[in-house]
Length: 487
Image 1 (cartoon, rainbow, N blue to C red):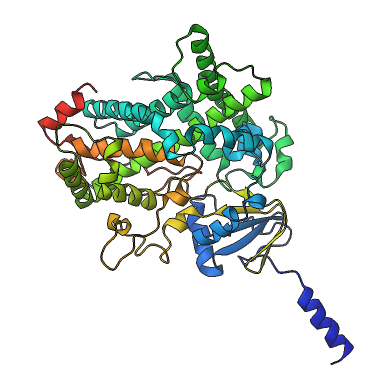
Image 2 (cartoon, rainbow, N blue to C red):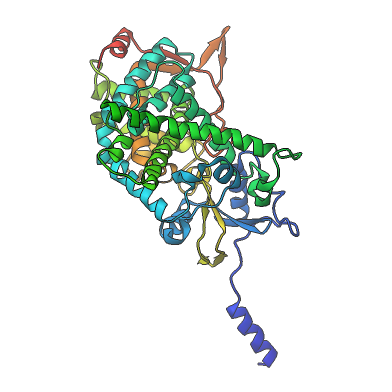
């Protein structure tokens, strides 16, 4: 072998692996023109079909890694969490608006670990969340009453209930029936979070230097918008926290996440800051996702009446019609659990999650993943992967039930929920199963014409069903008496 050939083979053997494959970019700007601005999970899934479960693009020199497989995501984000747990600096949502202080955008470090400890101590397990079951059942009952009175205003009733449940838990606050200020400001703030953190939503996230553009400069409307959204966020964080402190000072505070952490302690300014923002993380992380999940549940009932009837039949058999279902009934309601899981899989609430940021170079499945790369798990694809879920675009709760010759398909909660898994799971389930016990949900009929609901996803980090109409009516007079009965 010649010297030249030997050197070539040696260089080839030591050559650094390449980035994962992906669409070819342009000089200097890379794939900036390929990045979707709407329903990015669909584009990412198409890339996955072409280039594989791990694909990549580069935007102005920033590598972006897209994961289109739950297994790959587990192998990278869970098994290598020590180097994949950091969060990127999101200029619009994180720096300019201020969401960088919440758990979802907090960089990996001491504060991140403190937040995790606070959450784990109070909501980190199913047994820990049980203390909040009575509050969840009470607010679910109130939801039924509101829905009985205003069945045509489903979305508003769902929002009130989601806010009521989480504000009781996070701050011991009981919401007002109409136009509650804390619920309204939180709804606005979480909507702004979704818009400000969506991949490709703002150019400043791709060109960070733009954050220094003067607010009066042409094209700097994002700066003025960030100031407005930052004021909304501050109001959402400070209002409930100050409420708890005032209640504690007067001796009337209810037990909550915040009061438990503040009670009888001499706290530094940093410790109180952590408590305030971790409680806000709990609220902001659960409220809007809960709204999306419950709305999608009602949409599914309208679209798939046979699934609703099977769930109601199971409730009638197990619970009867003399009381409403409660948390203790859940282990005996396997079809209702399966229906809940299928809705969660069918409508992906957080389609792409918040990006992770790699803390050091890594080689995974032969690909080079450089330090600083953004890693985006395409959760929508995980939930619609035909290698994992048979006929993934078919609505089929039975996929999660054991049957002769068939193993139940994987539980989607593993990748659909974040740090509030047990809390969100419990609060959504109880509202849904109580609703099934007393209401029939169907398609609306207007002027003799059936209005067909359409299942679509809104764009944003948190994705809601697109607006739809449905008919919600009590199952019987007995159901009405159960709704109106005092707990």
